[in-house]
Image (cartoon, rainbow, N blue to C red; front, side, top):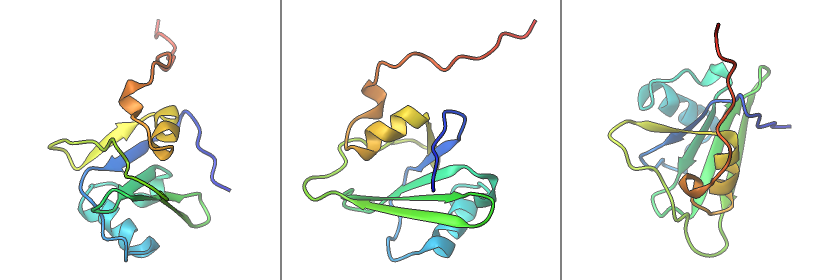
Length: 117
């Protein structure tokens, strides 16, 4: 089972992916286009060109999980636009994105970090 925790790195690919690709093809895209190792446990999010579907890829230590969500109506309204190949999201922002919302519009409390001292 995939568990999305607040500590998990969530990386969203800015450019659309070819959804004919499976686990191996998307893992290769993580290496080539995003410059990330897919075996680190980070969760990678890809969209198709029409932005009607997303795929999530994550390695859990034993193997890859690949999840596919296609909206029955409409498109994902928000997708990052950046000069970088990927954008980072927090776990709660990913939940908003998967529901078709705008993760940048959430008003969640900032992630707490211990102050060194």
